[in-house]
Image (tube, rainbow, N blue to C red; front, side, top):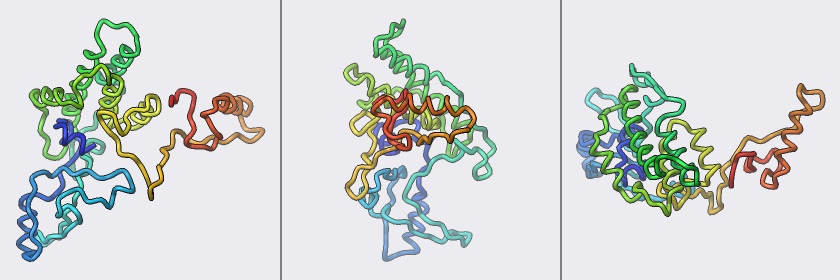
Length: 278
């Protein structure tokens, strides 16, 4: 997510993530305290972490990002310089670090509706607007909403999004409308919009198969020691014991879902449920 937002100048980056603490002041302090291990300040302080276990040992960042370092501050306290950019905690917990903001998360936002409408139109449902119009309105609405939510939550170093930033983002190749990639574009932006609504993000991925490793918003392949990691798609099911309340109905529901060959064994967390499309 960080890498995508950084590459495409997504204005939501600063709303969702904090810069790491390799500030100019901290780097200078490190260099004073460690004259034999000088590091160079890099103004790019947004650094993402890997979701792929096999990639965590691959160093792709500047040398000084490779490991945490400790410095003594003016007040005598020790500070660990950390590589990664962490989530803006106040977007979820506004009281974090003595914050006094509020959390605001609508059930269905304008952006959510627009992305759903864009997908409907792409799949052939009639509308007074084109899929592109719904899509572009959805992206712009999502950015404005996150800017407003971040302001209300009083995230660290908050700066409201400018319209010029939205315009620039809309013109990037990853975001610009492309009818040949309509569903991939829509799902990619909807997935980002669902940052605070992980259940919907997971449902979107299961239903559409997007995003994936080749979508405009690419996800990292997951492997462990070279073996692909299969992401669970559901909770496992267990049949109720005879005599359990609603036993017959409960058992029938599992049996009905199991008629689908993709359902697998009830206890298989990688099988699908009735609305989950492969």
